[in-house]
Length: 81
Image (cartoon, rainbow, N blue to C red; front, side, top):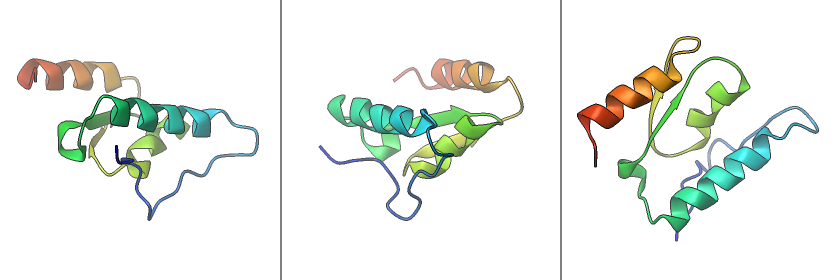
């Protein structure tokens, strides 16, 4: 299993922030599922979680405030696999 994290953009958050653990857990889940970078689209919007798509070597869609779920739903409907 190969990490999908971008070695050129390591996660960087404020001291004590739990987002770094979320990034590590997401990476572990994606690799345990056996997904490749071309099979994953990370969808995010504003805020610190909006940085997540830069930390991974996957497809990404960075949208407007509060619209991530809408975009992700559209992607899944268009590409159910």
